[in-house]
Length: 566
Image (cartoon, rainbow, N blue to C red; front, side, top):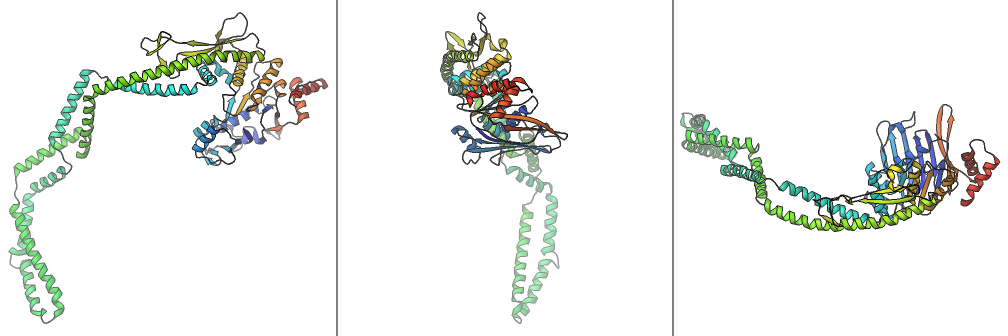
């Protein structure tokens, strides 16, 4: 239930705070006082779209918050799964709208996405707005109401899951049923590509190695010249490095016995002499092995050209080419196994068709059975709302489909995501008139009463704890209004109900009565709300009955209207 509502700087509401109670809470007030603004604020709290136009003129931010008491286990689990901490089963919802675009959505001070709030809000409040009865004009809504009444939503969800899986697999099968010639052509092309890559015998290291070898062969003469010059400088010329280093060793050897401190220098010089001799020998060996081989260079250039050609076709690098090669191999294997897989998938789909057919028939039969009971219940409720001669019905339409796989009453049908065929509510308001589609024949007042009858009937099945009726009295008069109020009281025995009304007969049925008032201070308009005491309620009902001039008779009549709920 909603325990408390606070609104600040929202439309013409400057600062509003109100506590609500269980039972039937009625809200009244003159046209334009701000009743619809409170509904808009509640809609925002339930995940509605944030609009900066709702911010009070001259302010930069608007705030709406409400404290809910949550007892439904499924709703509590949903809140917990959303990462929201709860204490004493209380949930504080806050929405902030900012002209700067810094909108915030908080649940118990934890920031959440608006989509999360909307999902939770759907389980907290059923908001029936001024035009929501018009949803009855859409036949696709009718099946949802029948499933809710007949408690067939679980079967419907099981059917929908199976049907969705079936459709996905059916799509896969259609993609597998390629034209045989097209499949063979693709196989041949993939085989050619694989052979081209495999015959090349690529490896990730080869390209680096042969590029290095190519560079060596192209610059063989320059390398040889450098090697020979290095050898000459080290050992071949008079006064070479090794010759001079040998002289250094002789000089040091003659004095090292005299000065032992030179021992380390002498040993390092001797090591350098031997190291340089090994360098010279290495240079000579490399020089002897070095040769310019034009044929080998041509082989390498051809190989690099082959690799570059494969790169242009299959990838920028050899690793990419090899990855593409494996992908093509998998694709070729899939094509080779296409027929086998296709047959296996066809067999699996046949089994799924049997499961879907069984669920679809079960769902259709349950809907037909529950629709008969729903029809009787609605007619009973409508008679209590002074629609004594009304007839209500549900028409089922099962179009045949020669390509369908479900046999129902000797007709082959094709399923849809909601089951077999369609259904639509029928209505006849007067004796002797045939049942016709509700959407085509019912007036606004009749639609309002049909919706109220449905809400009353579905009260036990619907786990949403709060119901809001905004002007459910559309198109009805005083005599019927009292009966509408009785229905609202009935619903309010198990739910917290809010009703915005212009009719005193309905307002008098409330267990709590709130008046929404508008005042002008200075040049600013403000809207507020306050709970009425008994005598204030009497005056409000009298005003609603007779206008601004309140007579003793209208006051006494108002007291009469309040007696049933005192």
